[in-house]
Structures are given as structure tokens and as C-alpha cells.
Image 1 (cartoon, helix red, strand yellow):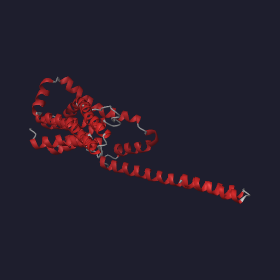
Image 2 (image 1 turned 180 degrees about the vertical axis):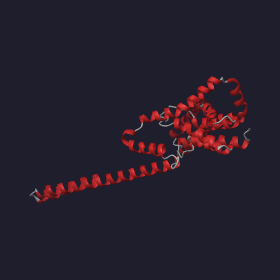
Image 3 (image 1 turned 120 degrees about the vertical axis):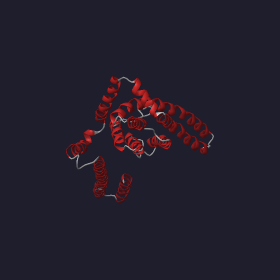
Image 4 (image 1 turned 135 degrees about the vertical axis):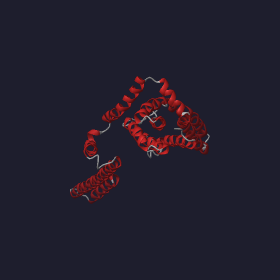
Length: 289
């Protein structure tokens, strides 16, 4: 099977857009499960795309890039792994086995993009000293170029020579190494879940248990989308309730201070002192509100 030129261009642009999404809005386009699903949909095998993408998604649980740290580019890995799995016809396990080293290899492209972006940022600093804000805005937008190309170029090359790459992989990679990569793909979800131990599960463990129970015992009735909607609803209820508690707590504090101020005023004999005490307490209540 060969990938059309239009599909290659579309998927190359998609990973570039996904990287921008990861740096800005975070709507989900940057996630491996989206990358696998989109690739599978474009190439006509959505099931394989979802399996590859979801497996890599589990591997990224609890993983984030802080400061200058980099993480494996599993978005590009999910796109290329899904494409190779469909081209070869060897199934999702084959694609997962290839997606892992691809994601690790493309970590170097992330470093290269950061390095290239420093040029624009240094130029923006110089323009800021000249109070040229238009140039500063322009330099920040130019940073998009390095981020997009760092993802789009590898994917474009990988998909353009996809059939050749798959043949080379089949001919040169030993069977034991491919089996090892497949095994690593199976282990990755467990690693992603293990990383969750660093998340605040002690505070929110009831929600974690509820989600696990729904999928473990009611998988036929619940889909991942249904579980996500349940989780979103519970999170919304928690936030709304917390806001109500904060407002009621502030109101109680104001009432308590108002009551104390009245008692203090009653104990003051001099009218001028009473007026001054009332004014001070009113200012304190206004400040707390």
C-alpha cells in the first residue's frame, strides 16, 4: 500500500499544528490518541490508529515537559507508527513497536527547535530595548516556524519513503529486537499508570476508583467518551461546590467580625471612640471582602 501525496502533506501539517496546540491552547490535537486516530482515518484503518494512539497515550500519563526538559515525541510516533502498521499490514503491535523508537529519536528534533527559537527570542529582546513592540510580536510569531518544521519535516520524509522504510526495517531489524519493541509497547501503559503515583491521587482517589470500576465492570455499557463525560461532570461538581464553600466561609468571617465589632462598640463609653472603632472595623470587613 502506498500513501497519497495529499495524505502525506495533510499528516505533516497535522503534526505541526499539533505541536502548536501543545504549546498554546491544548485542545487535544497534540495527544498521541488523536494522532493515531487521524492517521487511521486518513489511511482507511481507524481501528489500528486508535490502538496505536491509545497505547502511546497511556505511556504519556503524568509526563510533561517542565522548563527546558524534553519528552518523547509520541505524537509524531503515533502518526508514523500507525502509517507503517497499515502499510505493512502487520497490525497495531508492529506499529507500536516502531512508534516507540521514533518518538524517542524525535526528541532531538525538539531540542533543535528550541535552539532555533532562541535566535528569534534574542532578536525580540534587542527590539524590546528599542521599544519596537511590533518587531517583538513578529519575532514571537516567527518562532512558530522552527516548532512546525521540527515535526513536519521528519513525518513528511518518513511517510514519503514509507514503503522503503518498512522494507528496510523488515530486512535489517532482527526478529528478537522487534519482539522486544513489541513487548516494550505492551509495558508502556503500565509505566504510564505507575507515573500517576506522583499525581495527587490521595486527595482524589474516590474518582480514580470510580473510573476504574466503571471500565473494569461495565465496559460493555461504558465507552472512553462516556467515562470522560462522567469525569468532567464530577470535576465540575467539585469546582462548583468548592466555590460555594469559599463564598460561605468568607460570609461567615464577615458576620463574625461584624458581631465582634458591635460588642466592642457597646463596651466603649466615649462616643468618639465608638465612632472610630466602628470606622476601623468597617474598613477591615471591606478589605477582607
